[in-house]
Image (tube, rainbow, N blue to C red; front, top):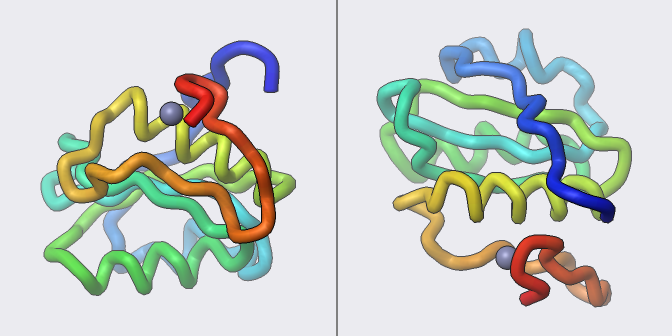
Length: 112
Ligand SMILES: [Zn+2]
C-alpha cells in the first residue's frame, strides 16, 4: 500500500436505505456508522457482503446513518478500515482493526 488512501467514501446515507445504496451483495468494503450523521462512531469492514455487515453491526447501537466504500479485495478493505480508524478515532470501535485470521497484513499507518 503506497501512501494514504483518498477519502473517497460515499455518504452519509440513512441506514434504512442500505439495501438501495449498497446493492452489490458480494463485495468487500469498509463502512462507518453514526447516530447523527456527523460523528463517525463506528469504523468497520467486510471481507465480503458489505451490506450485510453494515446491517449486522448497526443492530448493536442506535445508528441512523452510514458511509461506505466498496473495495476490490479484503486486503484493501482492511487498509481502508485502518485508514479511517486512525483518521476518525471512532468512539464506538475503540480497538484497532485486526486483519482476518491467517493473514499477516499490517496497518499501513502504524504497522500494528
Ligand atoms: Zn494502525
